[in-house]
Amino acid sequence: MGKTYRAQRHDVIRAKQSANADEAHHPHMKKAQIERVLPQDGDKKILELFAGQGNLTSVYKELGEVDAYDRKYLGTGDSFIVFHQLIYEKRTYDVIDIDPYGFPNRFFPDVFLLMSNGYMFLTMPKPYVNILNGITQTHMESYYGEANPSLDVILTQWSRWGLCHWRKIEVVDVAECRSIWRIALRVQKVKATEHTGVNNRPTDYKQYATNQLDMFAN
Ligand SMILES: C[S@@+](CC[C@H](N)C(=O)[O-])C[C@H]1O[C@@H](n2cnc3c(N)ncnc32)[C@H](O)[C@@H]1O
Image (cartoon, rainbow, N blue to C red):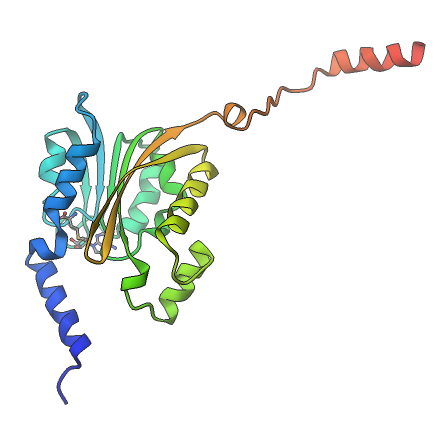
């Protein structure tokens, strides 16, 4: 028996991805967004995960120093694991680009530890145009509380995950292409006390004891 239509379509998509076809990687849309969003203000430290065959690496190299990772084309292992190593090494970046074929959920919330002040570009497949099997549905429910979250739900959750590490997130650009969004975030580390308005000064125990003694004396 021949392959189903879906299986054949899958093979065509995989072949286009391997051939670095523009239809599979949308480099023009991604490059235009990077140029639109990033300020041209001097050399940047850039982390590129899922760098592929370098469509975006060439753009980033014009802007500063690039650490590029890709399991297949650069032989640098699984980016979902490598980023934990980068956190352990206490690296920080001005720009982080995460461009997987699937969902980037497993990077959250800890990816924010790699950035104090900068910009992130993330690829997010549109859940509603991708056929979600049971495993993907459970994966999405565990990250977003629902199997088929809207863009609004997704961005609200990313913003919550930012605050897990006291990073304020602002969505500065959303570009659409077929089944994916490319989302650009401005990320800034905030002081917990300033962000919440809670002034958590240590108790002045000496003053406290004096006040208590005064109370008893009166
Ligand atoms: C969407 S493509 C990247 C396209 C690239 N950013 C560009 O603009 O040309 C995704 C890439 O992720 C790589 N890849 C897939 N799974 C990976 C993994 N677990 N860790 C690292 N790279 C992976 C693939 O080899 C592929 O090159």
